[in-house]
Image: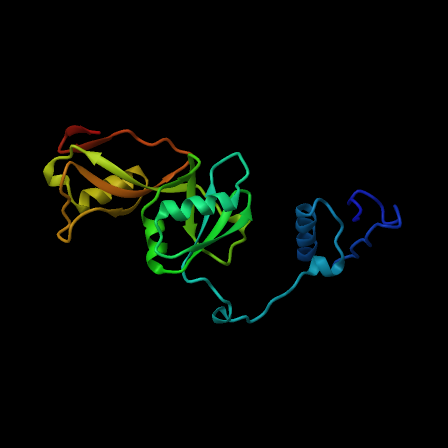
Length: 225
């Protein structure tokens, strides 16, 4: 068992040897950071120096073709098998999908077809046991614990817009006001038909959703719900 950092090197026969003096201040800072991550354990020289990787081609690193990472916003520990069973059916996939638990209610899901991957990515938001699921594109260069899940992609329906504002241009303007604009549901001419303009946006999970948008144009105000 490793000895705590505040104990001397000779406190007990089972203690690990303390790290010897490091040559560079940068190495000392690295060792301190690693030590803090590991509960203030003393690091050996080998651990403090780390593994230095040089000239690894990105083409040599295998990457999944269609994958997403997600987080279930729940205070209860995620049971990955239960969520996998439920979501595969809710998503209506043409092929199966494979889930892996990443800890802290985070998971990775890999799809066998681009169509299933695109469907899940574009048609949320999704939930499991009434808890929102936040999804992001797979990025193999980031540790799971460092992934920030702070936004949710949703479809917003803006009702009772003037007919000349039921189009792609105003969809982008309104979507950018609500959050981060992603897409708008229009035809090939850029027009929307029906009672509502459907806009897909990414909204911050720590911000309240607006219930209406107040359009201001030519010194006139127009409330749209």
